[in-house]
Length: 476
View (cartoon, rainbow, N blue to C red):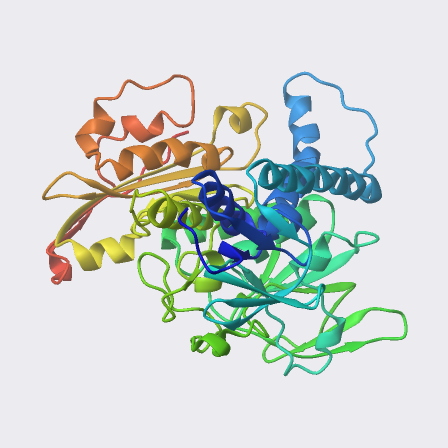
């Protein structure tokens, strides 16, 4: 980097996935980089999000595995579960990952500061733990998001969020989860799988708003079969704690719900409070997110932001891509921006979801002629021991071009499958490309290349009379 009047070329605030990637890549290009993190390296995903959550998802699957084993000739004896042991193993893994993130930053030449950092101007950052001010040519804000608690609800101090769920001293016998986004639904599967009496309460009429409607309904029905209870079109109005420690949630429509634990998963807010952005003339939006351009630049030319703090697409891989794009563009002479229009994603619910592209509702609005291919079936693994669990696969096609515009999957391993499918969809694959791909047999995923007859043809979506519903025949 050229000589500068600043202490650093780049100062990164936040040691999560996006900030770490940007810092490492920028440093490898020769920039003088520092990073401040007040907690642990790895951010929400590694410390209190995706990684520990999936470890808990794995643990919660085993009761079903033991049950299915009998159908395959195994005699499973008495089993028991130790929550404390699981959490201890989880904590050990998080410690390992935290150390890896720190080590990789140091190897890349990034100077680390274990401190809260606040912006004091376009080129100035104050490290609170060190009580000193430093200067930098550019600042990158990557402070992520934090769980929302509705503090207007009387008794809200009795609830936990996903943060605290990873550190419970013991499993509750019963839990009420407020919200029905992916965090709520994933934790509902975890608690239910581990034997906790689990209820989900949500102010709307179905789970996972924003996902394909058939996928949402399929997952909800499968979760009900597994024992999760849902209370829709209802909200908690107050919470009281009884002398016996039980929590009583008063609701608008369902009366009192008594549980051992209440978890709020009603959204996440960008973590910008007290960050000092106003000192650089940056105004956040009504929920606290930092508005940025396609190349992650804020209204202050020397300050950039990536990841959940911008509220664009709040997923760890997206934050990583945004951080990498920033570093390549600013320090590597290779300008590019992240395409947020096609993002494959998974929900580690039970059963698991994988999805990319448009929902059916979105596709209907965009394309006058559309074909919908869909199937529901029991996977061989479940059919053989007679387990009542179904998979669902749905492909949406622009009928005028044959291009696949949406794929929505539900079933074991669909998070893995959607990664490969995402490559094809991002490359602009057509239904004909899917059809000419030889099936891998016997697998569940072969259904993606063997569906030949549309379950539904939509012609001129503005005229409902022109819609032809061919019907759906589940595979045995």
